[in-house]
Image 1 (tube, rainbow, N blue to C red):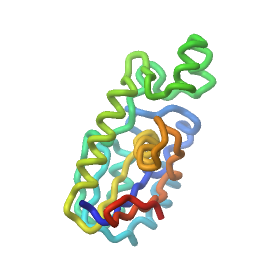
Image 2: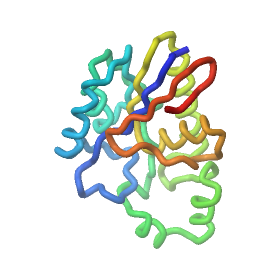
Image 3: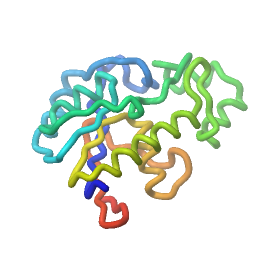
Image 4: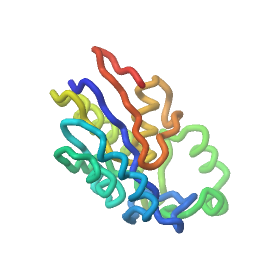
Length: 182
């Protein structure tokens, strides 16, 4: 089991994606996003596991450690809601669907996209697989939704109750027989 995990959200996206639900869309980082990730070059770990999406891989490449791509770390596919704002989505869906999304997100489905339960299963499996590696330290570079799922589960909260770190920021979890956040 890894002794410490660095949970890292990819760097900032170009401005046209601000406030939008970006899941399976595959933009690279903005110039500001690349610049903010420069600090990751000081991070020391044994391995880096990244989502295959460009924004995560670009972020992960700043960390001086062997890089492994894990498809299960990709963001949820928002389907027909890809690249829309919450306001745009709210105007298109029924009040019942909106209530499901806000009150029972683990039962959510995205039209033409992914079901929350499928996303949860793959995010949980990826985290368990990576956390069980016999390495001293591992970095996981992924997306907001994946990190919300991981942090919520580690804190014993339902669904996606925890906010992820900002883009390009690190959240450290140490292990001493049990997970501890730092």
